Image 1 (cartoon, rainbow, N blue to C red):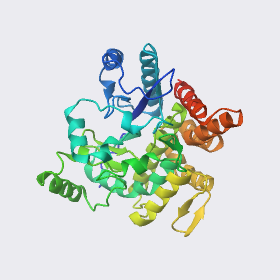
Image 2 (image 1 turned 45 degrees about the horizontal axis):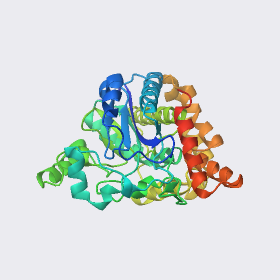
Image 3 (image 1 turned 90 degrees about the horizontal axis):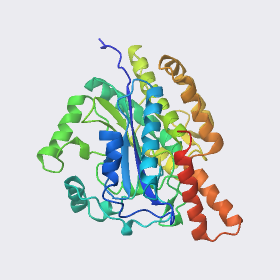
Image 4 (image 1 turned 120 degrees about the horizontal axis):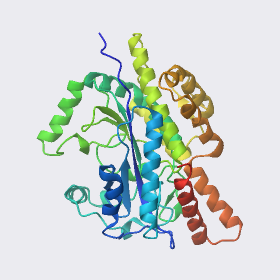
Length: 378
């Protein structure tokens, strides 16, 4: 017998890059007082990241998407105001258009020192940011069951969030280059499939007992059961430059989770597919975002992304109504019409070059677009 329906609470974590407003480059050595000033305003909702040129914020546990929007807007606004006093601006982008990873300084913290010591060059290159969305599911067996099914939708979420087309000043040809950097670490990529929570825990315990990891926070899959909270944590998405896009994707994710739960209450379930197939869609999302469609495994063919999105929105319509986030979920279609951050960055560069700017000037124009879009709609 199923327990009481999960509350489907939400928590959103965003990582930002800190740029110098004059040079538009990353601030490798921000003022020592900066984090303390942010903490004075936001308390425990702000923290350091691996690199000193990064900062992370996290919403409170939100009962619905409207609370999540309100809290995330407060976080972004506060970071913009505090950093602005130092001539710095945050950009919600998963890579910087031109600053180099080799010029960055690492945060002096035991966890980060341990990571860089173990992972060496793979960790030193992590000048990347992501968005993590927690969905509250206070039932361990249910979390594993929904994890197994939700993995199918991860490439779709990635395709709508891409914000990392550049690396070291070069157009990589990928809309999400971030994952090529992150995938160099162990225990990344798509999650394994488990028959039960106990089976999952046995696998984690093997790594802990072998001394490979201290706990499951060192498992960095695209989606994972959170160790700290009774949630499933989606980690595949690039950080969305526009806050509206972040909220739309958080709403879509929670509706997908509720849809999968609802099927379960009717003795139905989403078909699970092999990692080989889902990885193909993951790669397509990294490479093209939504431009070239994804594979529909049942039909065995590539389907235009707008058609796939319409199908997902139809599947989750009942859930969007139940969770009172119909408008936010519907706004996912706006991402298709105006493009992801990656599309907008590439367009800004193209327009700057067409106006006679050098490549260096054009990349700085991309940063200006990111600064503006990060601050928009808050």
